[in-house]
Image 1: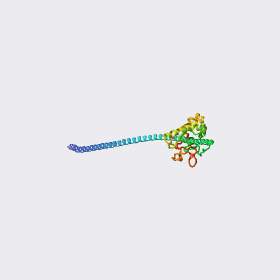
Image 2: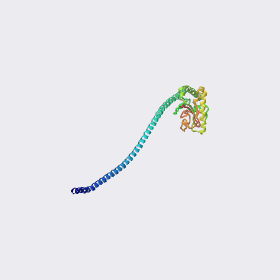
Image 3: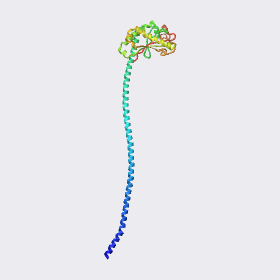
Image 4: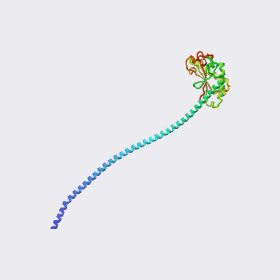
Length: 288
């Protein structure tokens, strides 16, 4: 009987213990579930945060790549600009050398021109003297570097017929030009020897055009007749031009300016001064 009672007592104790164990397990399961849920939520939040960070990183990478491409484009443009700059510098250097060469040539031509004009003037003065009987210079070198012959020495008023007293002057000039052009160096630097006709502003433009043209042509024709070599060998170097009243030898609009040099001031005029101021000059102008 005692043993049976003990067994019953043990069974009743077990019945009392089992609900407490179940509660403990349920509580633990609930805690575990909560922990798992918290872990899931944490992982979800962390994943979203990581996605946001990835997107930010991707955006930053794109921006960096865009900046990199822009830098590369800038480098390419800079390289192109440097190449263009080097090319321009090369062109400038070549141009500078060419300009220096041209400047040197122009200086040589200027020196040659002065020398040629001086030789012509000296040749005329050596044969005919520096001045005529009226005291006027037979020839002079103008400010523009041309040989100037006063029209009163060569022509009568309003005429393009060459005066007899002017023929020795033109004969000497023709021979001197022939000797100068015989020099190869001179011919290499002369393009045109221009015989120019000028008048003053009095009279109509059309009349002065015609008169200045005929005077320049008359001087050239006479020199060709006086020196056949000049025409036969060097005729291509010569040309005649007319400036009418638009390039007067003396730009002053006074009676003294209208008179030939030998008739100015108190000197007596014996060379046939023009009455209405028509003026022409035969000038020599080598070109480059």
